[in-house]
Figure (cartoon, rainbow, N blue to C red):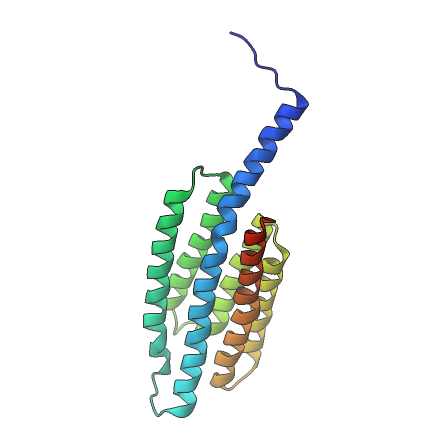
Length: 195
């Protein structure tokens, strides 16, 4: 059997090509941040409007269709993205695991709302902060890292600040700085080919 010896240049080219493939696959994630950013931001503001300006006490019911829409849109886009990807990388796997862990953690929190004193807003921001921060680390994109930190700060403020309408306002602002701004920055970088 003949050994194939690669030159340093050939080895470097293979590594560089693999990194570019991985970056291309991962960089499409801005759409998920945009989808969920707008859905959560809209639900926060919508809940706040219902709470402040109507007599409807179950203002949080707006979240049920909002989450359903987010799941459907994410599933459709994820399916289309999966069909377009030519290769699956370890980076894709790690990135997917981060957000699967978020989904599982979120679901567990929903089942134990009474035990966490119905303070789901702050808990979700902690979980989203973790996943956003780790996503930024995986794809080496600092605005997502800072976005995760912004979500953590928002969660701390929600734990500390009362009354309830401030939770919704703080949640919306946190999503703006934690998801939407970094997502649009990532999308711009994708278009420029620098991610």
